[in-house]
Length: 389
Image (cartoon, rainbow, N blue to C red; front, side, top):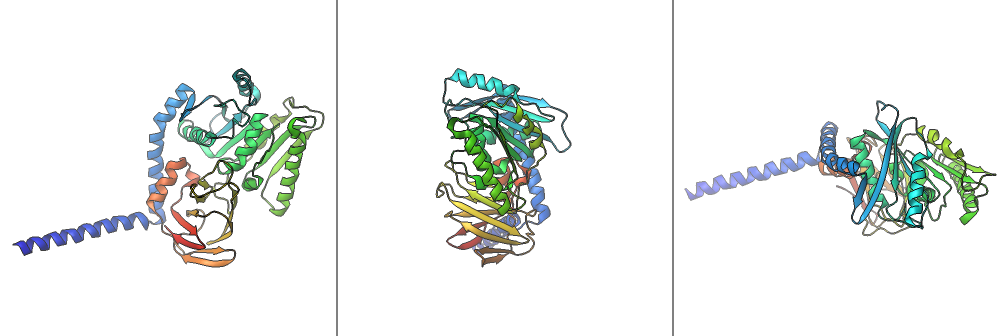
């Protein structure tokens, strides 16, 4: 009897292990159709999770992140297109001044631009400082804004634009490159570039405006120089670094609304969420993901550069200064039913199939609610070796 019971328990254990192995296999060896179904279901689930939070934030007209509060107003223009609304995030001027100064600039920004279509979102900076639009925690606050608007107003993640005047222009100079994977295009008005990472703009159009007499902080000279740099980069990378630079010779800091032409220019572009050639330089505010590239923030450092390109089913790591580099993949980027080849500086280091993984799908959905940036496969690059998750 005891022997029989042992046999039964052993059989049950084997069956359990086999079932758990089957479940694990089913979650990590998905077909393209299975991966797509999981992504659609997870997106629906996570949007339902986000909705009550979004509704509460929109009712309060403010977003809280830790001990920071960002107030905002919104205005909707035009009918909603079939592919979803546009979102324009418009940053006011001011800076390191008394709160009433920044409040006045916020009021001015609300009336500064009119849209043909879209949500015009005007936040009030959570702090009164010169770097109020590009210091911590603006990345987190804007990410929350975008998730809320995807849920509440059916904003299309491929039609999100950032723009700003004066100190808001300073913010655009920093946020456009740092968060380039969020934007369809960016427009900078009367700002200062500081130490912004221009190479990160490879895949987003950038429009710059400045008065020729706006000599404070050398804005007029520096914006013109920025435009010249983009001219040069566009020659090196044909088809990328799309831009326009407007220097109005007789205009001071206030350009008398000449910059309003930016709205139509912005609207003419849509984001490509998975460009085939990405340059990523870490800013002083570190990020763990940029388009389909990622890293461990614990080991990342400001100024580290990565450049990776994809051609067919081949991934070429041209430059990588990150200690740990992640490459996220999906079937829109390459064919995951076939082997993926990875080269580092032209040397082949990987040639295998990359499994579609349900956990990676769910993680990418939860991070952004962005259907253009849902990934099912992941490669890890460390010490010159590549492994598949």
